[in-house]
Length: 482
Ligand code: BG6
Image 1 (cartoon, rainbow, N blue to C red):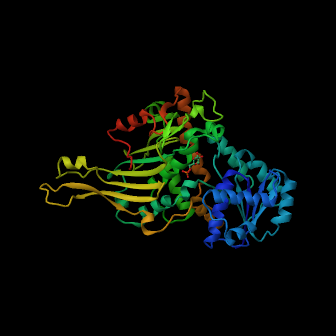
Image 2: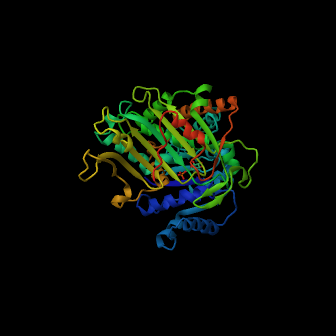
Image 3: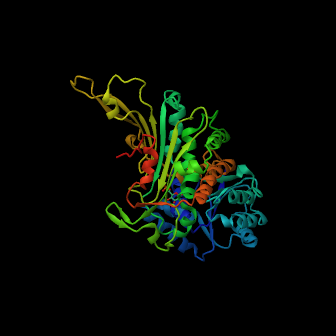
């Protein structure tokens, strides 16, 4: 099926940094045709040439090879239209000039703030751009609480059917997240252990070394909870914790994820006080380079109490996971960029190895999303040699992608291709987003009631001391891989 793509906000950061490079990679891989039109609309008055120069500069900046005939030919697919996408007349003109063939499928990517989703959708509707064979892709932030999400969603679904709306969470496009589903559901040996009989705890860490500088205002309105936990961390948690879906069909997978979200134990003030930590970075150093504190970043308001770090102990109240804590943490300006899921298994019921077992840590499955993509099973076995009492050591079964020479595609490549294929499995359904907001809202409301303020942590550390205390209280510690 022939498809065209319309990017609203086509000259913005997301489009330049992620969407065009991903579309080019898809073209290189033979996934999309050379005759696909990619129409970028934005208000900025730019010539076609100035636009393609900008696309090229951003791609080159990421290390892309822009001297090739293929790149030049890709640029030929891009069309820049400077217009106000909230105006029906401008959108009608756009349709007439570039998107008039209604036999072709149409994918519209709203790479804009959600405040203008509604006016853009109405303008498209009035301009006759809305049709059965189109899909619309929207990015977070999808609201800042349940109520605002519902209002954004009502605007979208007043014009589009639910199956036409693709809500992106780019973490679901990361190769290792999908590999986790394959590892869980394609191997007979793992699933029987994947429950509270054998799993002691699960840790999900998404650590970033970058700060909020550059988008301080936006970030300050959200904070780590809305920016990262409500979406990326909860989606990862769903993939780890969900029941095996009956099929790989979109709604089978999304129904199971939705069930996990509805089993998250709701937090009251007492649980919030005990099981959540907020942090905010102060000046420090990362990789030997001094970096400013959150309140000293450019454009910062010096009194902000927005959290740049969150740690949570979450519990899932169902048969599989009762009693297994899920420790989540995420933050900016942490020691290094690292996203990892760690599943720690319980010790054997009876050890014949005495103290050694306690010294060599037990079994863990480590699923690393970035910077490199790794799935590693840590096991104990015998240290080679003539030691008398069977000395143990921890060894790793390593399933990293790099080891077999394959490199993982960028999340946006995967997700854009899925939109083109009309496969919403890795996109978030409205009821999932609602359920996630419900859980998050209770925590935010309790923070406000309790007057909680973030605890400071030094940039370049692993977060505030309270995050260590949160897990230490349970006799455990955060796994920090080398
Ligand atoms: C975005 C957040 O959704 O994800 C950013 O808004 C964050 O604050 C980014 O930096 C992290 O994505 P990744 O893929 O670089 O881990």
